[in-house]
Length: 135
Image 1 (cartoon, rainbow, N blue to C red):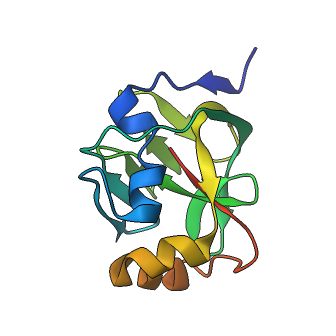
Image 2 (image 1 turned 90 degrees about the horizontal axis):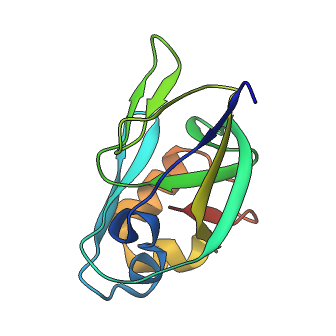
Image 3 (image 1 turned 90 degrees about the vertical axis):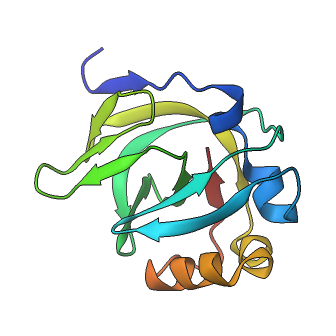
């Protein structure tokens, strides 16, 4: 099916959300890298939900559908081509659907864990009542 990608994720990159939200399991603080927020996952936390949505602008950052996303370490954004390159090398263009794993967490819980992440969410103009998807 054209315009539809499935991201293969490893345990370490797919599931850092619990560690981000609770500040446990050796998960480094996510930080803003241009138009994306990237996490450095070093723990063993896991989330097992799935999402299928188009790559989109959420506020001033890149997300899926209406959700801001914290992308796994190694993910990059090329604004000149509007292309996201995931840690495994797969690429997704703005508007293209992506099917991936992870889970959603309240931005309030995420912001309480890290001043840097709180600032990144503010800078991205993330909707305060919309959960953040963490891959």
